[in-house]
Image 1 (cartoon, helix red, strand yellow):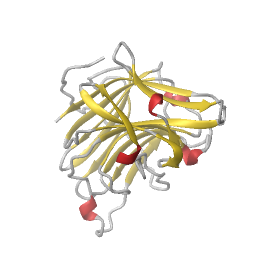
Image 2 (cartoon, rainbow, N blue to C red):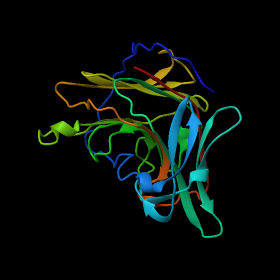
Image 3 (tube, helix red, strand yellow):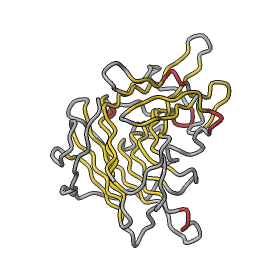
Length: 259
């Protein structure tokens, strides 16, 4: 379902630990280019390109991606799936991105699914990305990166492309996520001076029921100034099948952007 514009003020800050030991590959790395776009769809008032790569694997992963693993239902909700094709025994992932590039502002996603219980090889990415690998990206990723003992909620800010020779490194935060139910809200606000993340239980435009928050300030760190497409993807880390052998589905009820 579509939501109207909202006002968000990040009032809830948590005492949290930055994870600087391991920064996993970001969700957009080597994402499908225009040659891998088979179709478009309308969701949340925007046109999205849907990735299709069924002949050869592409990043992230690398994986196969099927356009029919992404669709909008009659209620206006967006579905992302990872599915195994029983005929060829291959797994196919899901990815889409906005045709429009967006800049400073708040990006909010309403997500339905037991994303705190995703298989260790499954990654859900909600992010924006300019096309420069390792730069110009703000990630929200639900992933354990192949290790069931890893934290499953990850925020990462990659430096501005124009700062690539200045020694800046990605700034990341991870914590274990345990949801109250299957509805959750995830958002980040990007400005010229900071990127601020929040994750909350339920579908909300407010700051109540938050369980995670993280802020990267500029200075001392680098924050991209570029307008970029928004990506959503559901994929397999290093292309490995889900360890439980099960298909995966996540539903996005709303995406909102407020400059």
